[in-house]
Image 1 (cartoon, rainbow over the protein chains, first blue to last red):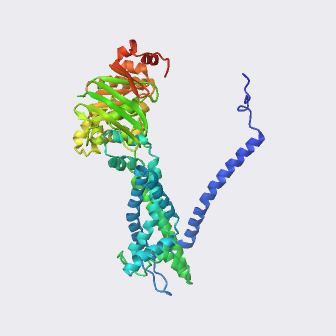
Image 2 (image 1 turned 45 degrees about the vertical axis):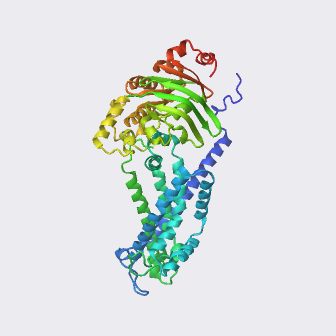
Image 3 (image 1 turned 90 degrees about the horizontal axis):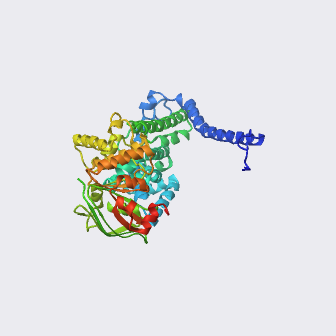
Length: 292
Length: 253
């Protein structure tokens, strides 16, 4: 039987096809490199600029008054951890709950409405969220606090966590749910112990992305957590945060503060990397051979 | 021990689509009953109605009388969760819980129903895996390997063990071997033969030879109706209905 494509597969590639193949591969490689370059560049630049100002005092002392040399950002490091902790405690459970609702329970219009709202909330500029929390909490309480800062960041985390959770749950094959229901396991238990557990790796990634994103937020903290030059461990008081401290120091006219701003930025990145890595390691422990 | 199943006037819908029409069927205890028929005839829907899995599909519903032992499956106030505990189900595609170890897969039905006695769980897991003829192949890697790392045939036997661990009275199997190779299939068939000592088994199958091999009774479904239901031998040698004969001789379907 005559085959129109006869030999086309076994013939050596023509020059043109070779060339397009080469071009496409080169483009893909170049694009990948372009993705890596900015991160590496930022990190290397931070190391160069910030490493010099990084010392034990920077990690353990509070800021010194203008003109005095030394001091550090210990209060901002602790403050950031405090604010991010509050944000995670509020934002992650609500986000996961919302994602579970969207993937497992929502039908039709209600689900579409919640999904749409989450997407819009995701697009609201962070400064607007800061103002909203300012008028909702700070104005009423009549003082700034880590609570209000954490709350503002939590609002920013919720849509990211919710949508990531939803997508990951929808990737769990339906026959896994059926297997559990068929065993006489109630629906809520199935969702919690089977479906969510099966999707846990992806859900955790979603939470980490949300966490990393808000960790560097400055705008919503400007009029919520406000910042603080002194030690403060009371979450109901104005609290220092690394992004705020970096902002204040970077726009100041003092060289010493500029150096410290770079060091602060370096610490912020390291904190995010350490937090993400720690969660990854603790959650991947006890994973099984051949688990998918 | 297994119990019999009595079905009277069972109707099932997908949305407005009536897909099971007034089924009457009486399944004897401690026997294997096969349900055969062409694709889309309602045989899967039928077994999924027996343990109320049918209604887990959006817009699907069923009504009629189904009695398993002395339990009214569609009785008022019946909890479908409790019914599914007593009527186990094995699905077409092996569906182990992917993130759980072999042991945890088998123990899942017990633990997630609030069962806490470790020693008893240990015993039930071993007993179920032995019943499912999988114990010897996995006993050394119970906690180390995930259920998803097993071969397809092993996964299906794991799923059978998982169903048996909650000690059901009836085992429903929805084409349990259709995704498996011939060797795994024959293992599953042998297993079904063993299981009827303890359980009542209803098996949906596409494969008529399989029905002939494993089942004492066979029901033939066509377009949502039960056309004929009798001893397997009778169905395959001297069927009463012309449509049954056409189907088993391969004239359609």
